[in-house]
Length: 218
Image (tube, rainbow, N blue to C red; front, top):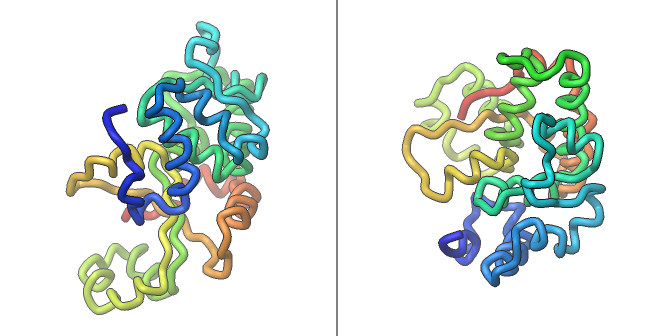
């Protein structure tokens, strides 16, 4: 890791700033990333342990290994750093996503092309975000009325909250570029805490709905 991602406490990394800064400090001190993640106070609630990537047996699917062992193979890189932080903050949702992936693999094996459900789960896991926003913003977003969304409706964004979930999305935002897209999913505006958001989302991830890839580009 080259330097601190969290030193400036970037707003787009909410709600990961506090736990991320602590894990990052340990990582920068020379601890292996799995150890830095396991040392965090939040790790006990996840029901999993972070382990080196070399613990993944050859020929075993990543999701199946997590489902069978409750151990998450983790490389010492920024991509897996953010994945670990999402596990710490959204443990119920991450377990649900992995459960559905593992069940699909057990039923159909690892195919050259993922089916609709596995594809949707992967898209959200890597590049998803939750958006809590007024209805007018959602209507414009779904209709892809970009000028209206960021023009006349711009003041409504003060009443919106975007919570990043995808760890690849967060990795890209470390060095952002213009043509970046998040796949956003509508979350109830009334939910305030991340723990409640995690519990709601874990229950909301249902195979029939998610196989339709119910996301909107932003």
